Length: 249
Image (tube, rainbow, N blue to C red; front, side, top):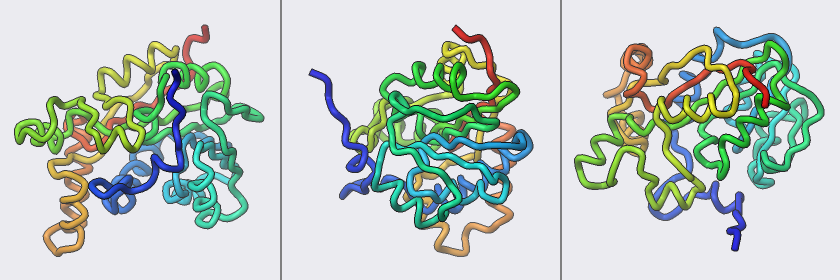
């Protein structure tokens, strides 16, 4: 019997775990934009998994033509409030989405780990949705982030790539590292042009949220973590691939 997912429930905070933290919005999102920007194409943008529009809003200075696909109608309702009526929204799973055209830029951030059949969706991106010469920006939480490795040594999780009960409740299906993320991208036919990490991270998200409310963390320290992440991508909060259209099966 196939389990039916409730995407509106998956995005809600639980008693023990938040779906998204201030660290994501205030630190990781700006760092992602900084990492993606040198590779942006002019033209259209497709965001796969827009959540409540916080990241979508950061793309608006760069693109006039933005389309977002999300499976949660509650998330889309919140996103509309943040970004206005200039962004087009499609309420659908990626498996069933019917899109009107191909896109010059496609972004999927912290979403692939939620997907039941990731290679199938990556293949749709390569074969159906990415324009000729288009670029695909793929970022996922990193299994090998020091914060996760510390949690393993503390006995909180069994191994780096473990999916915790809280993560599973939020719809996580796997936890990627650079090698497994590239494996799935290549298996879908995508051409990996650039690989990197985003923000060196030794603390868990809830710890970062507390630190950001103090004077312990400066802008210079945050910039140092961003630059160090480029030197040590396998020790970052997120891992990042920039792909172009590759072999179509």
